Image (cartoon, rainbow, N blue to C red; front, side, top):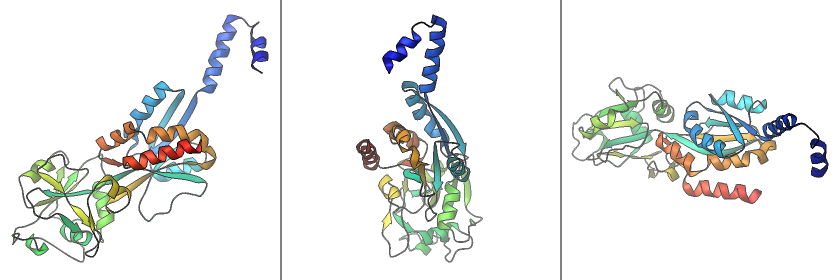
Length: 297
């Protein structure tokens, strides 16, 4: 009982009381060990550290690959993992809880003066891919009114912080190889080139910032509806060129992870992801997940 505890410590010298108080505080501080995909670990640190500064918690965050992160979670070496799970791949074991967190997306964009507004996955393969069933070299071949023999200027944005090209190859190209005429351009230069070239089409790491560039809607096939790269379309899988990231932790540790989940679904975290070309969950989805966490308490 608290009274007995206080009575027992009262005779102790002041020095010993200080040591005891420090020990109690140290024991009560909660350490959360997180292994996050090295594609986004830098972008989750600031919101988590801001939360730690105001609460009795500390974070150890390692940026590693998704497979070793899950292995560490299974071995109880960490408390939480944030992992990439490509569409169609199996989720982790049944004893591991998983929740959607964010998405990396490849954006297909054209000059705003280009009349095209949507395109199919197979046609994208014909524009960018070397060993595809289809092959397109002019806008006229795509049936674009007034395109005639104007050559397609295919560009691909390069950034050390993005896997948009690898994601495009995996999601779109059957053969995996790009045409030799696809120009590789630095990510911070590509929009300037596109703005002055109506014949250009590009793979971007994020939504275009210039109003002289527009993203295209993409359809899985000629018989499918096309969807643009909005947070809702990406989350529900309608926009096809995406890589999903999930929060994962042992179900037995559920009670300890709920407060951290609220931080991961906060507006501050969503804004940090968006600022770095990731797609956060739609606001309505994040809020529902937080409400569900509160109802479980």
